[in-house]
Image (tube, rainbow, N blue to C red):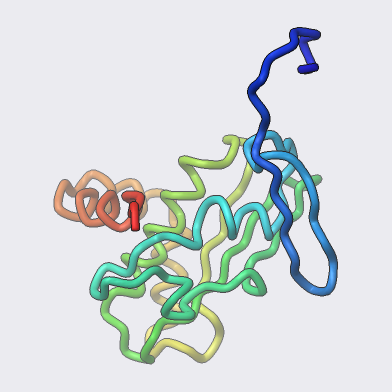
Amino acid sequence: MLLDGSNNNYTFPYVVWKTFGTNYVGLSPYLICCFSFLNIFINHIRDIKDPEHPYSLEELKVISEDAIEVDDHRSYVRVTFTPTVEHCTMATIIGLCLRVKLIRSLPSRYKVDIRVAPGTHSTEAAVNKQLNDKERVAAALENPNLLDMVDECLAPSYE
């Protein structure tokens, strides 16, 4: 029986997540009302593609579930990513992809903070400043070439 009292044969997918020695058992991730680092990682950012390589950010170890902080009560999300090399020219694009994906996926009440992991990029302070400046992000997204690149990185892969 469904929540509305109807008797329908449709069943929600059953999901079991295991991390940090704890089992997360529940219904479809689409039914979860609050956000956790695991929910954000699994459902939103793990499959973002790298702008230069045919791999996801997770496969390249640019992001991991350990690098996500969520405070649902304060409506705050921070993602810290690690560029593949110290002089990565695509660090701002990767950060922009993370920001856009989260802004599109999370309720508008959330403040999103995207950071380069300390000591992992030669221009870390400049990249962090660009990624967390609303005006700079808005200007970047007005550029059709950049927006196409971001959309391509965010497009789902059906492999």
